[in-house]
Length: 60
Ligand SMILES: [Zn+2]
Image 1 (cartoon, rainbow, N blue to C red):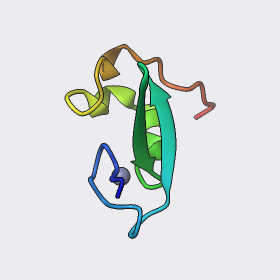
Image 2 (cartoon, rainbow, N blue to C red):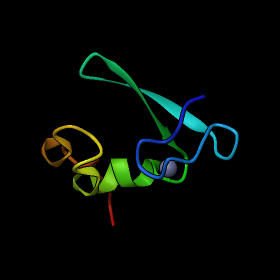
Image 3 (cartoon, rainbow, N blue to C red):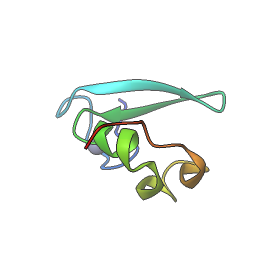
């Protein structure tokens, strides 16, 4: 069973999105996806080099 890399909720609790990253398959839940998009540095320690990921551009 897969779990979210950020909150560790399982695929039975939340929809998980499959990520390909650095040759690995990682999973993040729909609740944490906005963190990855807008504040990836918050995932530092959970996702390798998270602090180097550019946040997605957005208008607000
Ligand atoms: Zn999550």
